[in-house]
Image 1 (tube, helix red, strand yellow):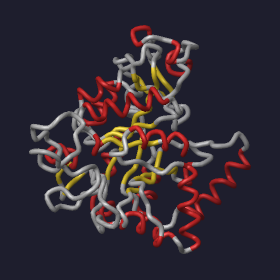
Image 2: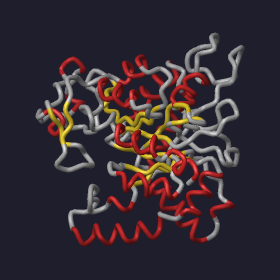
Image 3: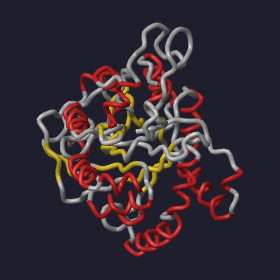
Image 4: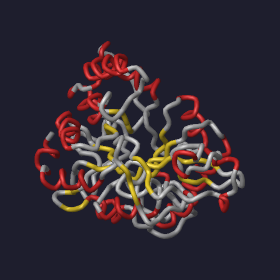
Length: 345
């Protein structure tokens, strides 16, 4: 999945590939990220006797990487954020896991999309009000977040800690989204990333710039994504013609695909506002030249949360380097059948 390089060092290296010259990219990234021995956990790659390890963005063995698939919260084909969901995603050669984190009362970082557990478990308690061992099981079926009316099922209903996920999938790239500015949560995530030597393959993500500032301070070695405010500035600079002259520290532009508004994504309670948002955002964001410029400067463009083939096609035709989906099996089927066109976009 080609991820972190210095600005301008990417060129045509396509991010996130389910394939590397026809081979699963997941295997490629695992080879490049094999522990080299020596050094302390969390040490900077390339220090001491360890060989320098490329991060999430870049070429592997001189080969450009193809398009990537990212399961949203572990996928909608199993119960979200469970080990079973992640294993299912990896079976479909997903390149990247997208995770949301919360903090329990006894200080354990756990995977949970929501702070309140009502939607996920039927228990009206916040994660922060319970110890890890008190966390309830997920419901037997959960409505897929971006596919209203569709439900995920699975035999694994247990909530899992971030530490357990890092242990089970040590070299799998992951995006960790932080929704609240809880400094204890942020510092514990940063510490776990260092301890498991994942600085180069774990990404900070947050919608809010105030939270991202804390995340970057806690672990500045991790690559990070645009916040909403920074994304708006990016688009403004693009239309003013100033973007080529402005430094871009972010490595990921993770954005909704405008065509899903009013179909599976409803940012506003009013249908009229959603239609207007779809029209305006489509005009502003769906610009191939913008996406090409970002990729040439080492920024991966990932559209979420796409669950239909027509949306996969729209994203890759724009030149997206990755697609986030609730259905990794469907995306894998699309990539396997449209490999040439997806890589050439």
